[in-house]
Structure formats: C-alpha cells, structure tokens
Amino acid sequence: STQSRAMPRGGRGFDAMIQVIGATDRGKEKPDGVDSDDDSGVGFNSLLAVSPDEAGDYVVRVTSFEDNAKGSYRLWMTP
Image (tube, rainbow, N blue to C red; front, side, top):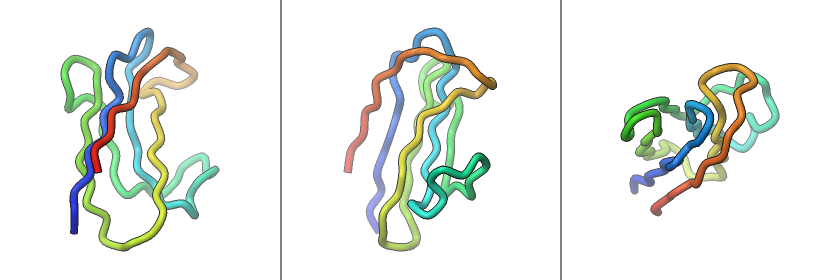
C-alpha cells in the first residue's frame, strides 16, 4: 500500500490537529478515525503519514486540539 502525508502548516491562533476518517464516519462527533496527530510537526503543527488498510474514500479533517478554538491554517498533502 502507498503512504500519503498530510500536514496543516502555519496554524495561527490554535493548536491544529489532523484526523483521517472513513467516509462513513463523516459527520460523527466522535468518529472512529483511521489515524490522527497533534504535534508531530514543527511547533504545534501536525504531521501524519497514513497507509490505509482498505481502498475507498477517506476524509482528512483539520480541527483543534482544544474545544472551540479557531484559527487559520494551510493543508499540505502528498499522494
């Protein structure tokens, strides 16, 4: 299987957290995520490498580590 990388960069005003979830879990408040990361990147940036076990659609979701925090970010992904 191939490995994809996703990283929110330059988060301002909040501690960005990235999650990869299956398409069927979209919309759930507490989805069963494929994988997630909080601070493996530089500073408070996330860094996540994912190799899904199954083919299909996945959702990459950027959220905040803290409840109700808001800010801006850029999402960088490689196939």
